Length: 438
Image 1 (spheres, one colour):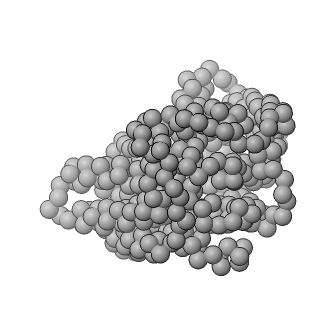
Image 2 (cartoon, helix red, strand yellow):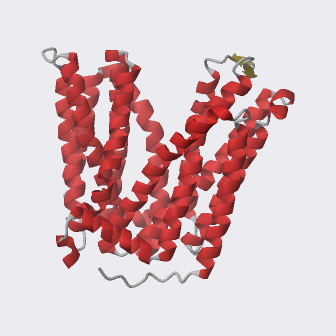
Image 3 (tube, helix red, strand yellow):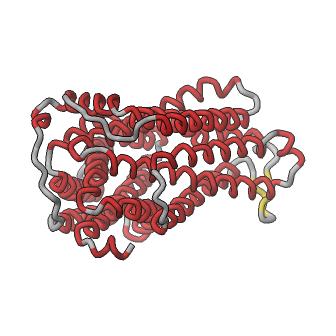
């Protein structure tokens, strides 16, 4: 790890990533709380969240082309600086009594579009740039360090953002956030990236460039199989935490309530208990997994690890479904069930983080520099698109299923079968990056 910090360029890039991640978290918390407090409208708050997600999804097809075409250093610097300027502007908008509430809301919505686009552009650029400034044999350690700090920031951002709002108010919170982004952008100016000769394909249109990225993926069979596998994983697992699990808990315990740590949880707060537990476990699991990866000395192919870890995800998902069988819920002490869930979900988080780390590591190690941005944007697009699609389809069928734990069991089995299929393909395919011509 200390070898990474001796690399001045990586250190500046890592610090910039921390500021960006923390700033995005604080912005989301601050603006969400502002909508709740200032408007009291769940609808307006929901629109803010939807705008943030849809904005990122809409530009993903061209983000990778932008990252591959222009200087990644300039993209990173400009994204931080511009986000800082927008947040400082929003601080004055919210502070001003001369601007009507409806106008403030409209300005925040428009600003959210730009902040979201700059955020996904920054993330794609910095992920694509990391292999350019460190040795290939240090990528594994850098991935572990990045995932650990990201999960620490996810936890800190919630606490820090809420604290800033509580003590200083919304305008000062956004002002501090904006100034921090600007300082980060200035520091990133001093990062030195190696120069690459620009290729002829950089002169094509953005959507043509995105198509080139798709053609590259299709020509690289293992990469194509990996992205299809990633779609399947996200499609089946995303609805579980966000939709299925809350309704499963409510249907199992909502009427009678439960006792945990000698405290009764009623139908109103039992879901909050479990969702808070999930957030804490995901944060801690991500931190620990990142540390494991940072200290790991194994040289096993990162691609082959992905389906094996995914089998672990499927197994844990299956076990959660079995734990919440109606017969178990009725006969086993609630504290024991809750403890079993925490243990299984923690292990599943470890496996999930390992899958994400190794997917990113495979991309960084095996995709050529001139295509890396586009391939990563394709992966991000698949991930972003598969989740709402899975949630939508699940919500259409959920009312017709009496025992919701069956969805966990079904999803777990499908993930394991998909993982076994990917293992067979990895072992049979030639892992050499193919020659690609436009």
